[in-house]
Amino acid sequence: MFGMNASTQRTLLITLTGRDRPGVTSRLFNTLSTFPITVADVEQVVIRGRLVLGVLVAYDSDTDIGQVWSAAERVAADLDMEIELSTGRDNSTPRRRGRLHVTVLGSPLLPAAMAGIAGRIAAYGANIDRIERLAAHPVTCIELEVSGADPTGLGAALAGEAAEQQVDVAVQRAGLHRKAKRLIVMDVDSTLIQGEVIESLASRAGCEAKVAEITEAAMRGELDFEASLRERVALLAGLSADVVDDVRRSIELASGARTFVRTLKRLDYKFAIVSGGFTQVTEALMADLGIDYAAANTLEIVDGKLTGRLTGPLIDRAAKAAALRRFAAEARVPISQTVAIGDGANDLDMIKAAGLGIAFNAKPMVKEHADTAVSVPHMDAILFLLGISREEIEAADAEDTAIAG
Image (cartoon, one colour):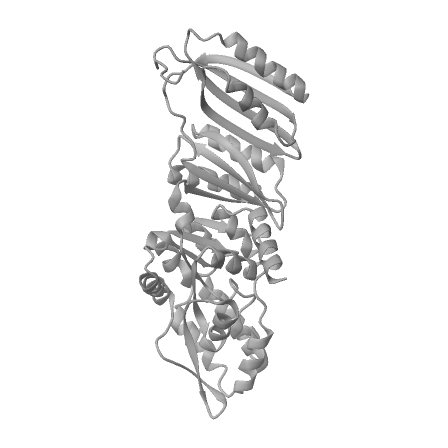
C-alpha cells in the first residue's frame, strides 16, 4: 500500500467547501483510510464559519481511483458540502512554501491596497502560496506566504506600492529564525512613550518652543545630536528637580506598549531601552515594565536644581548601536536575533545593526533605511511582524486572567 513507485504515481486533489463544524476533517480521512493511497498534502482554512479543506492524495496507476472519487463524493453529500475533484501526475517537485512572509498593515486596509500588493508580487514573478489574517484590530494585518522571490528585491518592489496605498508592508525570510528574535531594543521618547521628555521639561522652564525647534532639527538629522542635546539641556538650568519628578509621573506610554512588552516577556524575550533622554525617566520605566537593560543620559542635579549639564557618558547615535551590541552580548543573543525600534535619526545606527530594524511612526529618512516601518500609533502591531496573531495575544491574556482569578 505504501511502497508506491514514483514513476507511476498519480494524484487526486479533493476540495471540500461548506459550513464548518466538528468532525469534517476526521470524517473525510476515515473514509480515505480504507483505500491504498497516501496523503501528499493538506490545507485547511476557515473564514467566518466557512471551511475550505484541500487534501492531495497520491496513488499508483493500478489503484481504482473511481472508488476513492465516489467515496469522497458521498462524504460531501452527507455533510452537505460542495466538492471538487481533479486528478494529475506527481512530478516529484516539492512545493515551495513560506520562503518569505509579506506582512501588510492597514488602518483601514482597503481592497485597492491588497490588489496593489498582490499585483506587485505577481509582476515580480513570485507566487502567493497562502494568505491569513493575523489581526482585525487595532489595525488589520494580513500575512502572505510568498515563494519565488528574494526579500531585498521584493521589498524594494513593494515599498513604492505601500507608500502609494498608505499601508505598511514588511518582507521577511521565513523559517525558525523569524520567531527567534530574542532581544528588543527600543528608543524611548516618541517610541515607547508619547512625546519628548525634554520638551515637557522645557514647557515648565518657559523655553518649549526653542527646545522643540532644536529637537525636530536633530531628529531629522539636520543637527549634530550631541551639540543639540547639550544646547537644549543648557536651557533647563535652574529648573527644580521636583519638576523632573512631576514630568516622570505624567508620562504616557505608547498605545499598546504594555501589551507588546507583556506578550514578548511570556516568550522569554529580553528588553532594552536606549535613550537620548534621561535616566531619571528610564529607571522608572525599567521598574514599571520589567525592562532588562537601559542606557540613557543623566541630568546633573545640584542642590535640588538642574545645572543645565549632563553627567556620565553621552548616549548618542553611535552609543545606541554600541548599547545594542553590548546588551546582545550580555543576553547571549546573536545580533541577527535582535529587533531595534526607533523614530529619529539618532536611532539609525542601531536600526541598521539589528537583525530587524523597525521605524515606528518615524521620520522619512528613518523609514527609508529601516527594514520595515509601522505607521500606526499602536506598538503592539509590531507583534504581527513577528508572526504573533491578535487571537494568540488575547488568548494568552485571558489565560493569565483566569490563573490570577
